[in-house]
Length: 315
Image (cartoon, rainbow, N blue to C red; front, side, top):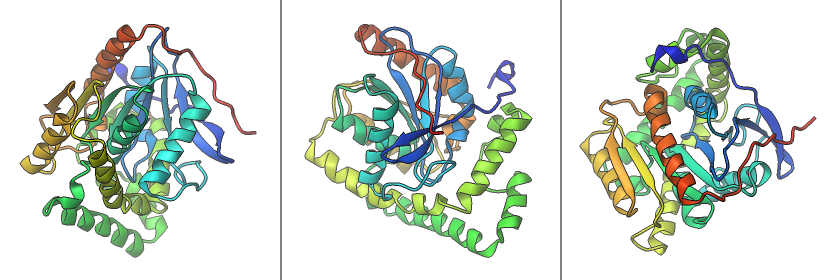
């Protein structure tokens, strides 16, 4: 990332009442006329603080919305960790914060799968999809990556059980855990306050809800596969941009080729490295992809409902 963007400071969240519970929402920037709201969706077991450089840069020209899912950050426990539960939460957050706006969904990993299902259910609302190392709906059927994913989640659960919370906290503060390959460019762009905020969030997440969220990925992918099968081969004529890393080998890339084939207007490019957290490693690149898609979506629908928005804060 260009060092001229650094250092990034923490964004100010709001606590928005959604379905009778509080949800921590980061709602920054303002949209121009006809422009969709950008919505960032995290991967399983992640915090929206990982989007800080991307959200900050995009918010200089557009309205960008992100939220912590149930039980993460300051968000209170909520829907069950099932595909339906995650999507119900997304629906409720959008209804509370951007009820009349089209949205451009930018999802990483499991968040990208949620974005795809939401788009299939709400084709008139979604202006486009940016999918970063998206969880394929066929992951459950992959004889190599399915057990590998289970082993990864199991190792995190084991570390959490064996390490006292205070020890784990010191390792997080020392930038040893959790293991985020390729985190360096992200970390170097954060100012001191943003680093502390991210570390606090990650510590709370991994001693809290991270494992439970990650265990929901495989059943969620299976449920999404059933839904996509019912919709037929194509999932709509909306613009889709996929970016895939080499983290999980050539088979992982082929799975994403299959995802791209289901969208007539999809583009698919490789990140060029083996780092799953593409939005942390390549923030500028992600921002440029989103801005290009946003410009196209705004040109296609210049009269869309948009504008700046201040979310309702809970006292």
